[in-house]
Image (cartoon, rainbow, N blue to C red):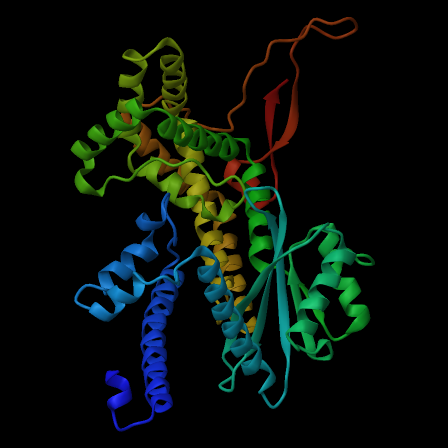
Length: 443
């Protein structure tokens, strides 16, 4: 009755009320969108074990403090924070970002771009391929952007190439302007006839294939470390020690107490080596080298006050770390991987250019040439000797000295040892491919 008695018509009043509610709903919805965008930008989970305990619900409650309008709207009959709505908002945001990326590329006077594809399996074992696009902006600054992660039914070259063409078609990125493609060296990607690069080059011959630089560095690091048994065994020990540190809570506590007393707040935890990426293993190696004495003390204590199985593991590690060859192997591994890790980091810079990559490679090659000398190995051997002397570790005056092996008494074989020249290399030269030199070894 009150509305009827007002001078304005009822339909005008209803329209004004509807507009007011729409404006209120729009303001409150934008606050939810801002919360979703914040959590997505920070990489935080949206939902917890229960809806009310999730990050989004708690964030909205905090924003509703002192905001009666938002508080009343969140308690309304319509739920605008459901998981379905959250996923819809995330898809809208993702599509908007991808459209902006594509628009920046296609708006250039000359449209040219390259694609980067890499794949892996998620936690459920489903194969997924990530596609990135690389281009330059108006200031000729290189940019790399992720276009998305796509599920594939199989990892054959034909199937992945079809997926890449489908993505470029849907995003309106012209295949005719594709100028580069970068993948790892797997056969399905790099094969000369049936690989992804070959299939795409049939459609666009100007799409030059380039083997991923960091992947090449990773393969080189793996081959270099595996060339020397001394380095290989020392790195295996670091990995075993890191696993023992993570699995045994008691050893972790013992080591932390000893390391804190020795190094104060600067102590670092022991970590196992990354199983696939060889160029990120330096921190784990340095952590052991800098806290070598603490590692020995913790292993010795662990070997004397634990269960038989754990004591045996700790005692075996302690005995191996008491050898000077272990110290030498770790120093050699740190010296070798350090430069390659810097090169790997340089090659992965988003704004890296071809000239910058070549300059970084030349710098590392120069550094490696310096290390391909006996003088540099003598420096590392002196460091290892100093550490071994300080910690009273068993040392060997010459890691490549002749050893006498027992003669094998077999039918038709002489029981007497003979001396013959054998080509050997010092461990550091094995890693870096130095020329061989000859010594006499009893065999």
